[in-house]
Image (cartoon, rainbow, N blue to C red; front, side, top):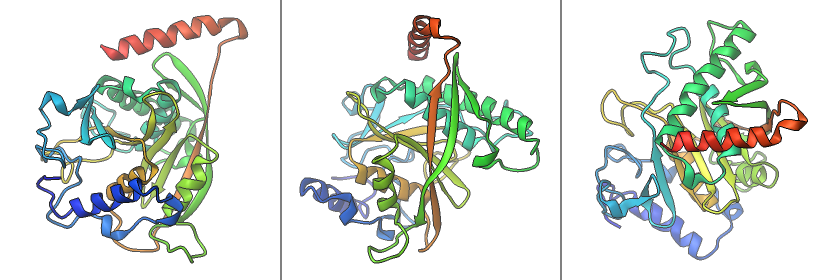
Length: 303
C-alpha cells in the first residue's frame, strides 16, 4: 500500500490481517489508535488524489460502478454534490437537516438494496428529500429554534414518489473504546448486536448522526452514510457533500464510523437507533402500480 497517508497503512494492514485470519468482530473492539494523526487524512478524503493503494482517483481502473475504489475488494466510496448547508435550502433549518437526511437514506436503502445501483444523483435526492422531511418534522413538532432529536421526527416520510412510515427505536448504547471487561458495550459489540436484529439504523454520538445499514442482496453489503462533513479533512476548502462508504466487512464499517466520528477520548456515549421502515401502499390493489413507480424512480435516478 502506498499513499500520502503512510502512518495509516499499518492500521489498515492490521485490520485486513484480522480479516484474513477470520478474527470475529466480537474479539476486537474499536481503538483510539485508528484515529487520524493530525497531519493525515481519512483514506477516502477528497483531498487525497490517490487511494491508499496508490491508484489515481481519476483512473478508470479505480472505479466500481459509480464508486471510487478505496481498498480493492474491501472499501468503496460514492460522492454526491449537495450538502444540507447549500444556500438554496430554507435558512430556518439550513445545516440542521442531518437527521432527516439520515432517515431518508435508510428509506432509500430499503428500496435500493443493491448498493451497486447507487449514484451521485440518488445521494443528492436523499439530501433534497431529507430537507423536506426535516422541515415537515419541524412544523409538526413546532420546535423551530432547536435541532430536532429522534423523538421529534415525523412518523411519515417520503422519498421521491414513495411513502414510508418510520419509527426510530433505541436499540443499543454504550461508550466508545470500552474494553471487553467493561459493564457497557463498545461500538463493536453494539454493532454486532444490532445486525443480529436489524438492517438500517442511525448512530448518534456527540451531536453527530450517521446512517448505516446492511443489505444481503447481490452487490449489497454494509454502508455508512454521512452528509455533515464540510471542508477539512474530507473536502477542499469551503466545500462539502453527502457520501456513502460501502464495505463487505463489519470491522471495516466499524473503522469508518470511528474515523468519521473522530472522538479523541474514552467513555463518550453513543446510541444506535433502529430505523423500523414500512413502505406505505395506497391500497391493496395498487401493488403493481407502486412497483411500476419504484422502477420508474430507479430509472430516473440513474440518469
